[in-house]
Every structure is written in C-alpha cells, then in structure tokens.
Image (tube, rainbow, N blue to C red; front, side, top):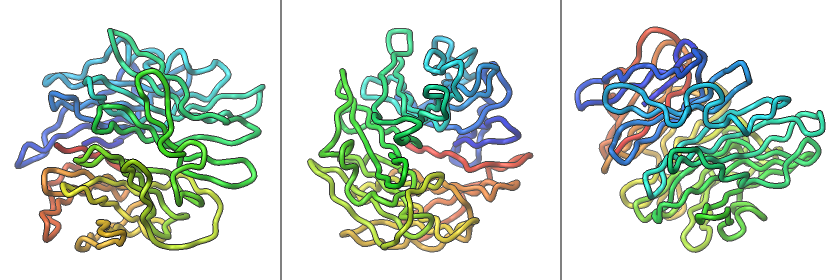
Length: 355
C-alpha cells in the first residue's frame, strides 16, 4: 500500500498483525506523487510515480528487493522511464499505471501532455515495458488526439489471463462527447477488443475516468462513474462486452473521478461507489446478475479510494485528505479495521494491492 505524504511517497506492508514501513522511494528528486503500486512475481512491491524534475514531470519506477528500493536502467533518475518521450516544449507525464505482464516484466502506461504546433495540448496515452535491460516504447495505443480534436487521458493498465497488457482510457472529443476506449498489446501492436477503440466500451458515454481489474477467469472488467457521483456503470469482456450498471443522466464527459474496481473470487465485479459531491460517501457494491448488492456500510467520506481482493476477502483503503488513512477488510459478512497505517503528515488517496 502507498500514499502521498509531505510531497513524497510512503510504502507500508501488512505483515498479518501490523503495518510495516518499507521506506520512502524518492528517486533523484524529492517531489514525488501520483503513485501506482503493483506486486512483482516474487511478491515484492514495485512502484511507478511522477517525479517533478528540472525537465518537467517524468515517470519514475522503483522495485523493493526486500531491503531497499532499486531502479531499473535509470528509471528513478534524470528523465526516468518517460525521458525521451517528453518534448522540451511539452508539459510532461502524469497519471501512471503499473502492472507486470505474463513474463514478469513491468509495464507502465501514463498520460502525456505536449504542445501541438505551439498550442496546448496533445494529451495522449504512452506505454513502456522493461525488457532485456532497457525500457521499450510500445507507442501510443490512443489515436486521434490533439489540441484541436480531443484527448485521451487517465489510463489504467491491467494484464489479462494470457499475460497480455490491456490499457483503458477516457477518450474525450472537443465540442463534447466521451467514451472509455481500450486496447490489448498482442506482442507487436495494439488491438481493440470488439470495437473498444472505435465505438468505445458499450455504455460509456457521459463517463468519468475508468478503473479496471482482471478476474480469476482472466477476463477484464472496466467501470466508470456515470457523470460525477451519479451511479456505477461498467462492462465485462468475455468474447464480447457485457455491460452492467444503473442510472441515467445528461451531462458532458467528465474527468478527474474514478470508481475503483476489483473482481472477487467468483468473478463478480466489486466497485467502490463514491456517491454525491465531495467529500463523497463510500459504498462498496458487488454486481450480481447485472444488479448491485451493497456490502455492509462504510462510515467514510472521500473523493478517491482503492480496493483489492485478498483471497476470499476484500480490502478497501481511503484517506480524508487530512491526517488519516483508513483500511477496512470485508470477510464476507462485515467490515473490520485492518490496523492503522497512518503517520505524520497529510495524506492523499492511497493505492492498495493484495495477494
């Protein structure tokens, strides 16, 4: 688990009875944030985050080896992972999303903003993979972006049951209109899933930012807010898209709000519904037969949260953006606190993974 604290990042691991500090990865520069956390095949945590460097915001990557944080091929110094992508006249990287592919290699997607003919901004998605001692550029899965056309942002990266990376993003058009788009890396190029990069994921108009997860069956699930805080909508891929969700509304495309999702041991999507306007009320909903079932009651308010599956249980984490991080575990019947990882300083929304 990790979270922003005092313009840096702290990482703590639950050892069965308490939260154990794993130090503070900061790379070459102190200012770091927007963390994305994943577990390597050996179970050790790895972290992608944004570092504020003299050359602009860059994607950094560090891996915990059991004693200290390590970088791979200069991934936490200078320009980091995104170095050669960032244009001198651009605005750099944000919103990284980290996963490990079927070969155990780290893959990072991020939102990149640069100038287009001197006009702000060409906002698009970039992806890089670490292999054979270097970071390989997998290009731009998004297309049709530009200062005069539209943007592709807020990417989320997952790996399917065959070990292939999938990336989903919020595709917005200038003048109105949005949809959740997605593509899968087949080893040589990005390919869409049943129209996911031409028509978009079904039902994803008037959407917020996507969240995604992969179930035990190896299939991805994507969810997004209907407008800001109205309802959860989503779709599951199983040789085709199977939409689910509730609510109807009329609004423009939204960004900056996402409903985190995981998939339980029975392949049912479970999402954190952040209802209302900020600070939003937390509800955990499991989708059964296309309808939501609320799992107990969480006494919490936040504008962002994290959720993960741990065996048969679920774990949710959030912060009230003051001096506390809250972690609760669902055992199938009730929510109970899972220790207290809080420390000194103020906390932004935490990221959470489990195995």
